[in-house]
Image 1: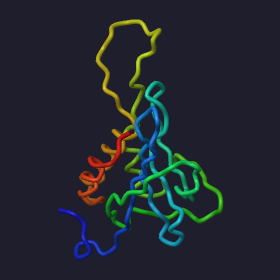
Image 2 (image 1 turned 90 degrees about the horizontal axis):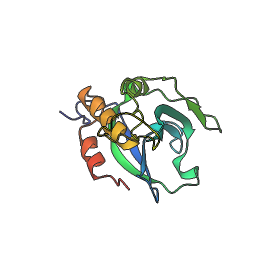
Image 3 (image 1 turned 45 degrees about the vertical axis):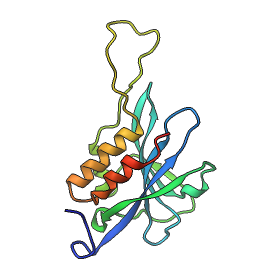
Image 4 (image 1 turned 60 degrees about the horizontal axis):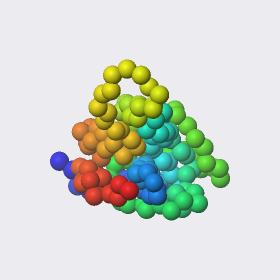
Length: 165
């Protein structure tokens, strides 16, 4: 049961930001463009490393084209407009961990991945690790939003096809 114009006339498009890296997997984030200043918006993602773990972060008034990094902006899907509150427009980007809308509250409800790598000096039994990074988190987050019927289910297919490297 996806969202469409007949069922939910008040929808907003959101996008997947893909920042490719030479050595590591690409960094993924969700970008929610502002309804009034569509060159900026909020980036919802987790930031960190496999060794140290990740933390949630909201980048507000964020323009993905002005980061100095190469970025692919891929249409991800539609979100119910009532789940989004636009942050007041300022010239400067801000970084935050406090949610201002349902989309961000739901992001915090999906735990950020902890450390996935074992230190070379670690002691104790060796156990198999499951590598969880920003891509894994974003897939969990998108699945959660689809289950809540906040995000169109087609987004999960977009994530499966998105560049990972």
